[in-house]
Amino acid sequence: MNFNEFLSGRPANDYVFQKMDYNEQIGKAADLLQEADVVLIGAGAGLSTAAGLTYGGKRFTDNFQEYIDKYGSMYMTDMYSAGFFPFPTGEAKWGYWAKHSYINRIEPEGLPVYKAVYKLVEHKEHFVLTTNVDHQFEKSGFEEDNIFATQGDYGLIQCAKGCHQKTYDAIESFKQMVPATKDCKIPSHMVPKCPVCGGVMVMNLRCDQYFVEDEHWHEQDEKFGAFLTDNMDKKMVLFELGVGFNTPTIIRFPFENLLREHENISLIRLNLNEAVVPESFENRAIGINEDIGKVLSDIYVNIEKGK
Ligand SMILES: [Zn+2]
Image (cartoon, rainbow, N blue to C red; front, side, top):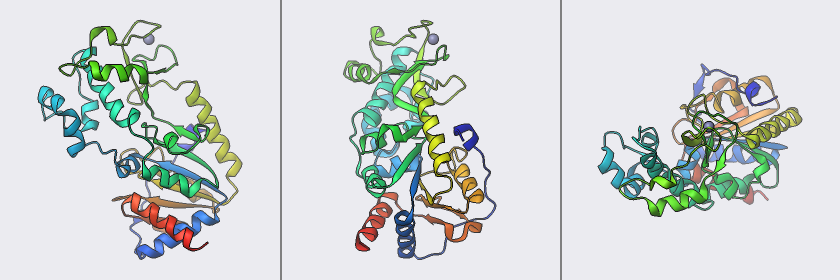
């Protein structure tokens, strides 16, 4: 199985918020993790939000007030919408993105919530499938070999037209751009150009058909496929963290599909607001609708108590 084959599934028609008591849910999740042979983590935006990398509110205004004043608070409502702003020039575009990358990808160390995930699976065979592009798994103890970040990386750039299937590490450039930024713009000589066609460069983020899946992306796609194939008959737990309904086709629906097709697979779904699970999965699925950081630490405490 590869990533494309994995991407199947549909919304369930029997989603429910489980009526189980919170402590009972924690106990069940702890048991499932303990008894698992292997754990496949599926992580979405909600995990990074829970970890503190929030895109709106004070964290946005603290870092981007100058940009909000310049481009208008109507467009600059948070870091998500700001990323879609049609910056008029390359100088302005990288003036924004260098800073965005700096505060979300370059500067933060491994955050406690991510480290808590690692502590729960470090002694089990595991693999991470994530739509997050902030590199937090790598920084929190996970082996790069065990991570498949399907949607890109805030540390990489690519040709806007994808004229060749290669990405470029931009971290050192971003570190120089940030202090050189004036009036929300970087100096012209710092604007990156495609080394092959001489055209415009963009962040390596999946937002159109030109997204570059580089060599590393394909290697990880293969490792992900091998992990699934090798472990399909084992006691596998899908540990889904912060995957909402924005892009449910990448992790949520395929995970549910795996449960439908394999009785040996179970699901732990942690989500602050959207932890509904299909009722038909009965006791093979657990959906905990609470702050993810709190839940992770409660599961850990429960496991330690049982030892
Ligand atoms: Zn090019």
